[in-house]
Image (cartoon, rainbow, N blue to C red; front, side, top):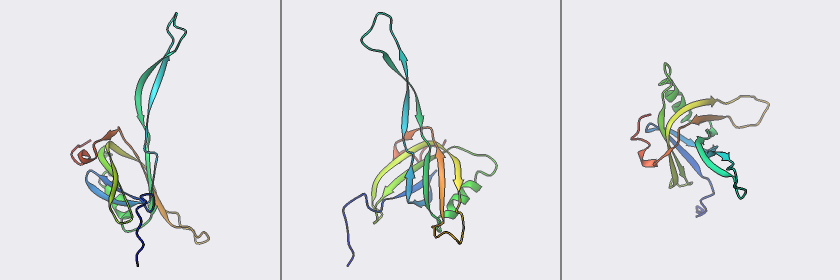
Amino acid sequence: MAVTTTDPALAIRFKLFLDGMNIGLWNSLEGMGMETSVETREEGGNNLFVHQLPGRLKFTNIKLSRPINADSAKVATWFTGMATKVTRTTGQIVAVDSEGKEIAQWGFLDMVPVRWTGPSFNIEQLKMATESLELAHHGFIEPGQATKFKG
C-alpha cells in the first residue's frame, strides 16, 4: 500500500524551463532572492533619524543541482544553441511535490548561464554523480509570462 502525505516539504523538486524548453527536474535550488541597496543621508538640524533612500535592486544568482540523469543532455542542448553567442532568455521554475503537483512557480527575465558544473567521477568515493547550473537574471516576472517574453 502506497503511503501518501500532505506535507509539501517532503520530496519537493524543481522543474526548469528556459524560453519554454523543459530542462528537467532538479533536486536542489539555492540563491533565489533580491536585495535593495540603501543610501543614508543625514539632514542638518535633524537629530531624530537618518534618511534611508532606496537604490538599485540586485538579484542573486540561482543555483540548481541534481544527480545526473537522462535530462542532463537537455542542458548541453541548451548550451549548444548558444555556441556562437550567449543570449538572454526568460525562465520559469516550478516547485512540484512527489506526485508532480505544482506547489509554486517563479518567472525570471533575461536569464543567462553563469556556470555549469558536471559530475566528478572517482571510484574511491561513494558519492552520487551530480551536476549544477548557475543562472543570473534581471528580475522576477509573472510566472505565466515567462514563455511570452524574449530577452
